[in-house]
Image (cartoon, rainbow, N blue to C red; front, top):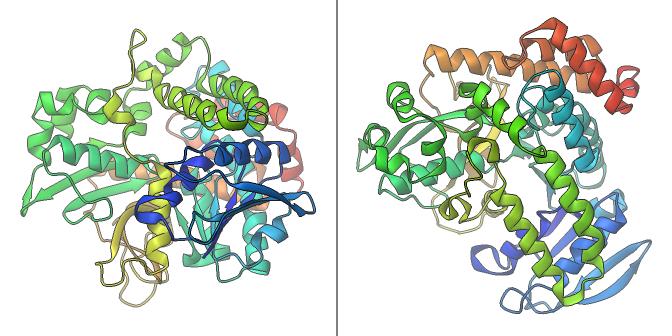
Length: 484
């Protein structure tokens, strides 16, 4: 199998490759193609892969591949051959699966996404609220180009998308690729597994029997967690010590969780604790985007020439980055709990999806994962006998729910209808997402204005106008989008 990674110079690419070198995903692919528009970033990530410790992979040899490309060669008994290129057509030809993790505008774009919102007194977060809309307006056009290239060069390939905001990007791609696109994020699955461990009922990584979860990307709730036919979630929500043992249980006041009767995704911190989140962000010396931008601006030039030290430099930077996640929710410089840093992230979800699509495991039961996919339980939205996995949301809308994954794709598992407070928020944010997708796909500036104004973390036409003007100043490409 040939895997292409769009955004192959991205900081997290070594996590994907590391997972392919050993463990349950070793031998899954024969070749990994790294594609990026920035050759310098590709060279840096190649250096990291080349210097991985021997227990992960042998030191590979590098040879020129022509046309500005290079290759990391390995024997057939070793981890996948790695090829890198700045040519999209070359990267796509013969590809079976595409992983997409691109960031148009780079980390500097993230800084602007956050700062424009903060300067108007709003929450400044890259995927939630105003910053997420801005990010989507840049990500979606670039991802549409990638999808068009796939239809030309590898029409049978699957696209596993983790380009953010993952739900909106996947929503925009479904009309082009149908069920061939699957959106992933690790925050929902991490919530489920941390909660299960805290409740004393750990789950297999790819089995969600007895799990009830409904939402959109970065906006969802765990509402059922069964063990032996008994729902253990109420007991977990009433156990202060158990809640204090994992991240989501600490993010929200415990009386609030008991009354809610649900366990929210960590990103609901920005909705339920908006003032606290905004205050925490303002108290930080740098925004999250500024911190990451500074780290990468210093790190990447060092990696390409670091030789055997490249992997160690990257790993230290990765740990630092993970420890700073959701810092606005922790007071007094509190360190992140090591247990919350343990385990795999989105690369594990992506590879589990790819293995299931490839029919991995033979007689194993079908893989179950929380994914972003159209809400219809049929192979096609509106197909005979299909129903909405989340009642109350359209069948063709992309949602984030437990899915069964087979070589035919991902099919959502029916969930309970959310209670009105949760369903109302889902409906409101889904409308924002649809307006944003329309703006990005058609160049409809009014739709972008409406999306900002309708978001529950903005809620003002005046603020919407200020936001859009600020983002247009920061990103001149938006003016070109409106002329599209």
